[in-house]
Length: 397
Ligand code: PLP
Image (cartoon, rainbow, N blue to C red; front, side, top):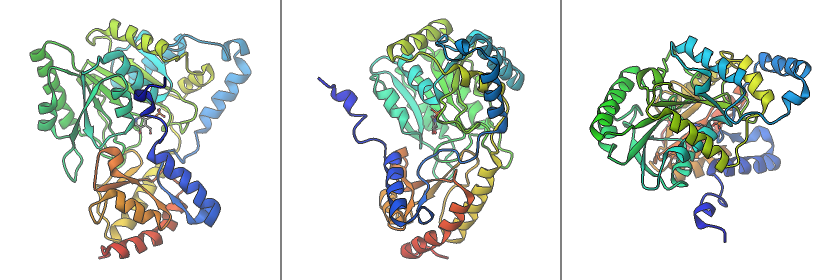
């Protein structure tokens, strides 16, 4: 029997992927240059030359028997050591190689941690808007999401509401900054208040409340925004990183989890993540890409393109009367739906071959998400379509 609990997450697929499939169909009908697909957050910058150089060097120098073999699930010892050294040098931490666990991007890290930590009925607090896959990871293991809307307009954390959402059943708080989809970067002051509150609530409740810092967009910040390193503020933090966006390799599937050496139940939690790996048939990240990523720590693709894109689309849309919070990071813009309904606005845009994801997908009704990780030319050429849409909604200044 196919369990309904599993089927629930399949079949329909994700709205984002459906929109992109529609875009590909329309491109065949009307020409690629006439379709403005801003649905999916796939990096447009090329991977850095350093990555390809490292891959070529590794292919030539590492014996095939070491490059194509099974390797330990938490990663190659040399790679774990390099990652720990990098984090320690960057953030003044004291990670040991054994505190690092390579993962299949951030997605698998999130799925493994929720499976390792949650028993049915336990709660995960998530500020919204948020990445929709969080719900799949939490609910598929019987956990319960407690969404906490961010403050209107700024999309900063609502600290009072977050505190009110913590209950004796809270096991995890999941934070994503720079944020997909709002582009918000949570300021240090807010994170200090949040982590002080969590420490106090841990003491009062007598059990750990873990923080999961999901940071695939750490380097993608604009105007000098700071992304504080959460494990330095709160030892019960699981730090989740991915090379998908920084090195533009979402298809290669490389990321890691860092377990703070002083976190509560560190050894049991590490073992539980290894257990979750076995339970889900997770074996290892490709040794070639582990080694290549480890040689590129601190290197990024040319991410300056995203800042240029941000400036271009923000000024273009502002002139047309659209309203949105200024994105400080990642490569997304949350546009207010002029008539208040994100789904209706997404459909209106679709009629002009502009593909935007309804905010409802991210638990943010009344908005649509525009992913500006696309060639600059596509953004520029989309502005006349945005003008026609603005005219039809009556928002042109
Ligand atoms: N977390 C957030 C907030 C994301 O936006 C994404 C991808 O878009 C992921 C996690 C997963 O990224 P990956 O599995 O490619 O590392």
